[in-house]
Image (cartoon, rainbow, N blue to C red; front, side, top):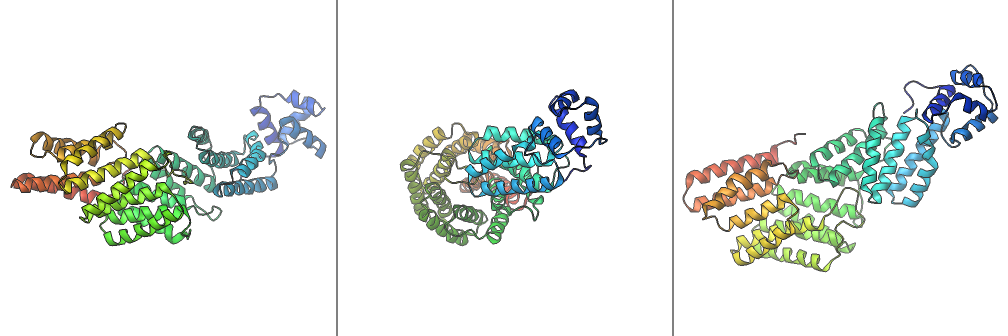
Length: 447
C-alpha cells in the first residue's frame, strides 16, 4: 500500500529529521550548506544532486532504506520473499534478509511497510518460540493498523490468532483467524495453518460441525501428501470432529489412516494423540475393552516417550501440551472402567488424574465429577453433578467449556434416575441434556 497522501522527498527528509530529534542546522552542517537551504529543501523549494542525496542518506543512516516509489515495491517484494523463507523454515536466511531490510524502521512515514516488517519478524520469533518478543511486536504494531494494507492486516491477524491460541483464549483467537482469512488476497500465498487452526478452535469450543467444515476445506484446498506432518494432524482432528458428530465408521477409517501416517514419520506425539482419540471412539461405540487397550497403549507411550511437551516440527499455535493430553486419556480410561464396573481401578485412575490436573481447573472438575459418578446413590454426589459440574462445564468461565463432558454426565445421571424410577428427575436431566446437545451441534460461537 502506498501512502494515502504521497509525500515529497523534502517532506520525507523532514519527518526523518524530526523523528531522530535533529535540528536543521545539524543537517546543514553535514551537507556543508546553510540552514536556510535545508529549510527550502524540506519545503521543496531547493533541489539536490546525487552526491547530496548520498550524504543525507548516510547522515540519517538510511543508505538502504526505500525513499522513492520504485524502491518501495522492491522492498515490499523482498519482505514477502522473507515471509516465504519463514514458511520454508529457513530461519537463517530469513533473519539475514530481515537485517538488510531493517532500515525501513528509520522511516516514520512508511507505516505499512513497518507493520509488514514487524509481522514477518514476529513469524521468525514464533519459530524460535520467543512468545514474549512476539507479543511485544504485536503491541507495537497496534499503532500502525489504521490504513494498513490488506496483506499486512492478514499477517497481523494471523499472528494475533496464534498468540491467543497458544494462550487458549479460543474465542478471541478465532475472531482474529477469521479476520485473517477475510484479508487474504492474490498477493498472499494460501496458508493451510489458518484453516486448520480455525478447525481446532471450533473443535475446542464444542462445535464439531464447524470444525469438519474447515478441516475438509483444508484438505480440499491443499494436497500436502502423506509424508507431511500437518496432513496427519489435519486428518486426526477431522476424524475427531466426525466422531463427535456421530459418524463413527468414517472417523475410525480416517483415524486408522492417520495412525499409519504418524507411525511412518515417527512422530510420537501425533501417535499418542490419535490413540487417545481412538480410545474415545471405541468407548462411544461401546467397545470398552478396545478403548481401555488404546488408553493403556497411549499411557505407555507417555511413560516411554520424550518429556518434551510440545510437538516436534509443529505449526506455530498448534501447541501439544503433554499433561493436558494425558489428562484426557485418563478421563477416557476412567469412563471405560465405569462402563466395565471396575470401580477399584477407576478410583486409582481418578486419583492419578487429579494429581496431573491440579493446575487445570476444568480438568480437576471433570475428575471430581467422575469420582461422584461412582457414588450416585449419595445425594451429595448427584447435587455436585447437577448444581455445579454440569452447569460449569456447560457455561463456565473456562475458555474450553467442556460441553461434551457435561452432556456425558447428563446421560449418566439420567440413566441413574431412571434406574431408581425417579421419572421426574430423569426427565429434568434429559431436558438439560437435549439443550446441551443443541448448543453443541446447532449453536453459533458468540464473540
